[in-house]
Length: 305
Image 1 (cartoon, rainbow, N blue to C red):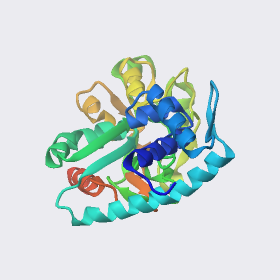
Image 2: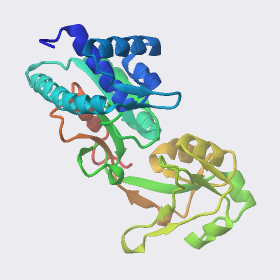
Image 3: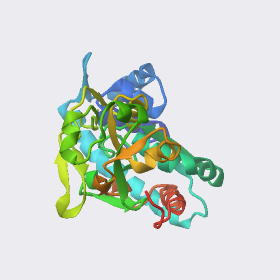
Image 4: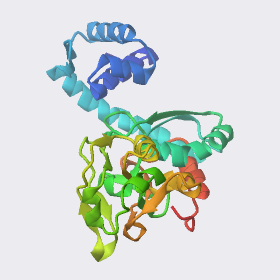
């Protein structure tokens, strides 16, 4: 091909979205088009190039050898183009473009929601795409500009920027539950209680981290109920199901008004802050610096978490 027009470059971008997602349906969702439109685009692209790029069946999409080679080369080219566009951000008075974020539910509630209105009002030329899920994802492979995670879980090849101070993790239960069961006095007493367990983003059950420094221990607590998100754990504790382990920040109101009571406060745990993270290969993303600044201003270092 002697040159590219805008349509051809757009078709190559569609191809790369399908390669990232390994799914026509997920690529269509990312690009905001129908799967039939993607199929039509790929047929036209393969016809124009004279090479089959994808092998597609009912379960998955895989590149052919030619498709894998093209994707590898295009990946470098698109990174170069994106880097050049990123450099322009420093010359703008206000961010322009699209910012795609992947954040867990706790971060969405505690960090994003309080600043969302002011942020969108301040930067009306920015398109923000927010995916809220507790699943651990590869943000680069899935096409996100940045994500939020607890500091200890950020991949080592990523740049991580703390958005909060250290986070305090506590155990709480309802007055109804504690009226029916003697409150634990030491960590081993938890083994005789109904504990509401948390299932992590990789589908493993979390072992409660209790205490700090040399006194810290990890306890595999018993419990008939497990949940994959904090709200379900908190709701179960409010219903008197058992003892929950969660961020103090998430249950501050419930503890303040007496719906939940902290147990074993001397065994609360200080953990890593929530961090915004992004690839070290990306120079900047439109609006990300401004969003981080707004979140950090909302959560001053001397604020207890």
